[in-house]
Amino acid sequence: MLCPCCGNGIPLGASQCRCGARFVGEPLDETPFKVQRLGPVMVAVGLFAAVVGASLIITKWLAFAGLLVIWAARRARRLARQQPEGFGGHRAATATLIATLVAGAVASGYTLAYIPKFLEDRQQKQAAHTRAEFYRVAGMLEAYKRKYGSYPSTPQDYGKAIDEQMPIDFWENGITYQGYTEALVQSPGMSTISIANFELRSAGADEIEGTDDDIIMRDGIFFTNAEIKRQPVAIVEGKRQETKGKRQK
Image: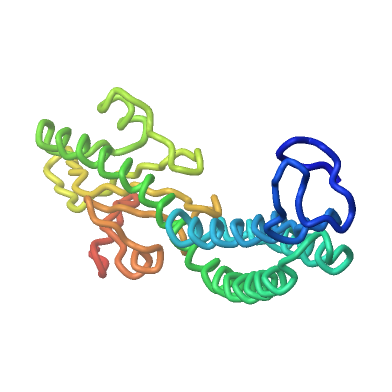
């Protein structure tokens, strides 16, 4: 053994070197010391915390990133079980895996329960886009009526009067327009029809006109298809006039 002070060799069993340096303790054991690595389990725990925080703060859909946490936790458990001298954190990895599976089950149940509401909200947003177009067109129709005393009678007249084609709805289908009459005034030798009502209609998400999801506006007010069937507006058909809720001959 070499003396750390002078570098000379020290005989075995000697308590001090010839230079006067003395031992203050037993020599250090030169056997290699292995330290367990905790990197894999710390990665799993960190991912778990990140996914939970992001799901609560940003959006719940990030909970699906829990699959990455499950993979990391299982990897950490496998390493700790197969190489216990080199990797530690088996209990922490197991706890993280269990917590992730429980949280994933809860999140999955919540997501499945939320899907109908999500679809309904999505459909409402789509319908709101179409209603906004209805309000814009209704404003132009009201301005036209104030100027000329009547709404356009047909979609073709609408295009000529408003100087633009009917817009499309959210589903990229054309919005239909129909003008209705409320009064038929007859005088000798002539008839005057006043277009006092109008209807704007979108076929809705199913793109089939006449179904329950139709978006309908009459005179600036929205109705369902069922309400429209119960409350027909006045319309002239040849010599017959149908008024709101009743017929007159």
